[in-house]
Image (tube, rainbow, N blue to C red; front, side):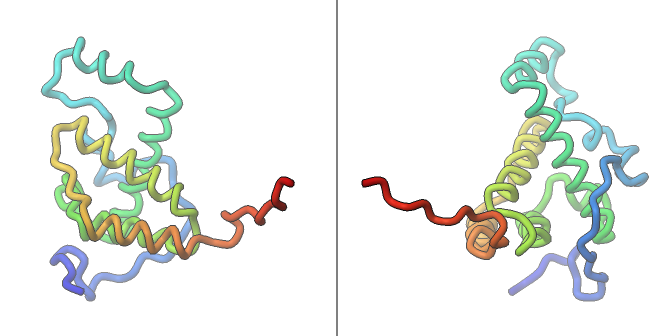
Length: 154
């Protein structure tokens, strides 16, 4: 499978580890990683968009963005390489949860990244490969993410 230049085989693989709730230093200075707000919008437009979701959703979206930034930093990527994120980078991020998280959890993280991209005015590059990766992640989710089958109601 062809890989993007930024994810070359020379780069060390990041090991799964506990994710931080704070941005890595090289990402903390980038305004796009500290907000879900498009700087090109007026305050009124930004408030209207912010009001479209409850505060808990915005908080979880920001946590997903932070988790993505921490992952990108661990992979040795620069902020310019991940915003907007290529489909290859999105697939690699999703694959980092393979066998560790349920497919729905990974889809929620990517949905937050999509919202972040679109709110900032960037093009979302997730397409067929990402959908196929998510299907594979869903099918290989850990057993703890599945409930036992319930008996039929008669």
